[in-house]
Image (cartoon, rainbow, N blue to C red; front, top):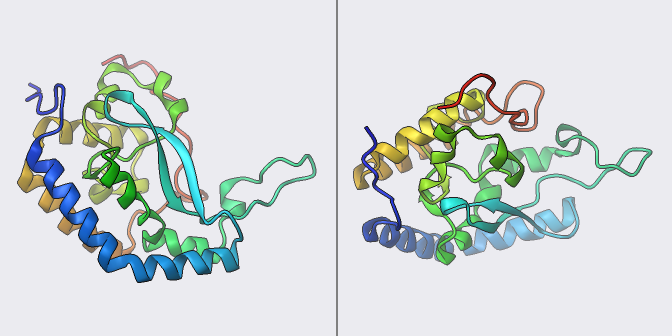
Length: 212
């Protein structure tokens, strides 16, 4: 049975934790973020940041902010090459260390994201979710989440969504702290960064023959 922790709003304790960590993180990490910005400009050119619309709490659309990790190479038809062909060694380093995610601290300050929650995915996935999977939007999307510390991109989409919904139903302040600590371990070990043959994971195409 769902505990319905987030029927209409985000718990104050969760929001205060987000604001505290995001502010402290930006202050402490600002020299590193400036250095990464310079390196992105040198190795990948401008723009430095990757911006993309993503669905957030209750499906509200916001623009996620990351450091760029891919170049803009195109094929003969002037179409962008697949992600795995545009991901540079420098970009791969940013991703495996999760340094490309640091600008999302600004999204957290703005209230579009939380430190912990389901990762914000593509808008194009919204019509593909079944009702069970759609419940991942009953919380703020996160910089890290229960799925990220339990396999990340090495999981199937269905496994990730089940873990996301489990988090929605079992949220607690202590669980968020646990996920943050496990995230640090995963980042150090660089586990589950991508699926075989993909820059991250293959696109979600829906879950056949399942409606709940």
